[in-house]
Length: 178
Image (cartoon, rainbow, N blue to C red; front, side, top):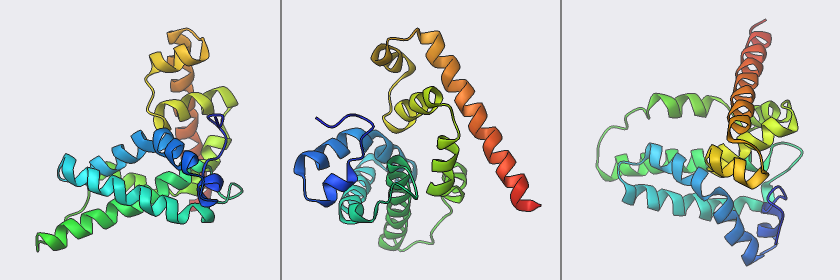
């Protein structure tokens, strides 16, 4: 079995069916969360989720670990396909496309490269805890159990990581405006 941190997309690009299944297991929660944010119903979200994974598997060979992290690449593909899903839903209903919710708009402004850079700037423990909670969708309790850490420690590490990421984005935004 591939270690949790080993990239799966190069194996998917090579046609490894087990890697594709592992990719669905690893990123399923992330993809579902993005799809569900944009879809009108669970049924629509299921369709969008399937589209996302199909596109991800077609695009797996384009993944470049020197440009972004694998979770960042997956999130970028998922967001693009989710927006395509909104457009399809709007055209099917013959209605004017409404703006996605504000949280999605904020997410769309942050590209995969910046997310990857922010994560790389974190100490490894904070990065690992955040990836487990955000990407894998694990609860703090599940992260604590997986890593044999006290629950309070996991919560503190996650909070500290989020604060560092916020500070990193604020600093880079200030540097961009100067």
